[in-house]
Amino acid sequence: MSSSVNAATFVCGSCGHAHAKWAGRCSACGDWGEIADRPGRSESILSLVPTLQPLAELDCVKALPVPTGVEEIDRVLGGGFVPGSISLLSGEPGIGKSTLTLQLALRIARTDASVVLVTGEEAPAQVAARARRIHRRSVPSTLSVLDTVRVEQVIDVLGQHRPAMVVVDSVQMLSCGSEASSAGSTGQLRAVGALLAEAARRLDVSVVMIGHVTKDGSLAGPRTLEHMVDTVLSFEGDRSSDLRCLRAVKHRFGPTSEVGLFEMIPAGLRPVGDASARFLADRNAALPGSAVCPVLDGRRPVMVEIQSLVRAVESTPKLTAHGVVAGRLNVVATVAGRAWPDLLGRADVLVSAVGGIRVTDPGADLAILMAALSAARSDSLPRSTAYCGEIGLSGELRRIAAMERRLLEAYRLGFTDVVVPQSAPDGPPGLRVHRCASIVEAADQLNVAGV
Image (cartoon, rainbow, N blue to C red):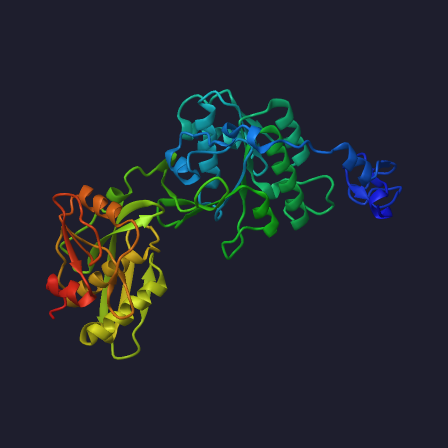
C-alpha cells in the first residue's frame, strides 16, 4: 500500500476541516492549537469493512414507496417516497417550492409521523405563520423546525430522533465544516449532498432538499449533486398563471413520465383533480380558431384547447408558439402551407395552448392544424368534435400512443366525435370515430378550408 494512503490526516477540533500536515492555525476557521492527527485512511478502511448480504435474504418491503396523502405528488413518485431515499426539488424563485414542501410536511405529520423542517432561509416564526395559513387548523405536534445552516447538526438530529421525513430549505444554505469554501459553492454542495445521502440511507429517513436554479433554469451547483440523489423533481409554472406542474426529471424507483398539477390559491397549492374540466372551463366553441385535443400529460390524458390566429402577409411569414413546441408548429405550418398555399402559405400564424399548460405531445398536431384552418376561414369548428393525430411531412396522419385512453377522456368530457388517423381503434359506445389518412381528408370531411 502506498505511503499516501497510510499517511495520517490532521483535523481541526473546532470545525472538522482536514489538513494534509500539522499547522498551528486552522486555515478554515482560524482557531489556534486545535489541529490534531487522526488514524490514516488504511486503518479507517479496515475498521469499516462492510458485511456481505445475500440478495435473496434482503427485505424488499423496505423499498416500497410510502404514500404522502398528496395525490399529485404520489402520482409523480409512483406511490410516494421510499424510506431512505433522498430527493432534490428545483424550481424558479417564487414558484412555490417552499409552500409545496410545507404542505407535504403538514400532510405527513397529520398521520402522527415525525417530520423535521430545516429552515436555513426563513425564520421559524415565518414558517409557523405560513403553516397556520395553509393548514387553517392547529399544526401537528409531530412537525418540528430546526433552525441551522450546519449539515452536521442536521445529521445529529436525524440520528437522535429518526423522523420519517426531513425537508431542507434549501440545500444551498447548508455548509459542512470540513469544507473551507462558502455555503452554496461547488465543494460545499458536494459535501452536504454526500453526507445527507449517506445519513438518509443509513437511518431509513426520507430527505427532501430544495435546490435553487440558475438563469437558464438548470439546477445550481455541480452535476454530481443530481447523481447523488435518488429523485430530481422540477416544479414549473408561469407566474402569470396559477397552474403549477411537478415533474420527475430523475426517479430511481419508478417512471419519469408522470406529471402532477396544482393550482396556486391564497391558502397554498391545491391539487388539480380534473385537469380536463379545468382547461375547458371557459371555452367558447362558437369562436373560430379553437380546437380541442386529448393530449397525454405524463400517462394521464387531458383535454386541451388549442387556439390560433392567422393573418395574411406579403412579407416573410412568422410563426409564434405559446405553450406548444415551436418545432411542431413549424412542421404543421410548413405541411399545411403546401396543402393550402392560398390560406396558410403566406400568413403569420400564432398558436397557443390555453390554461398555462405546455403541450409537447405530437398528437396535438392535428388540433393545431384545424385551429389554424378555422382561424384562416373565420369559421368555427363543430363544438363537440376533438382532433388527435401526428402529422407527417407528407401530410399523412399518424397514430400516437395511448389512443384508447384519449378517446375515453374525450367521451367523458361530452365530446361526440373525434377525428383520428386511420389506424386508430374504436372508441367507447356513443363516440363517433372519424378515421382519416391525411390532413386534406380531415379538412374535407368537416368542410373546413373550402376544398
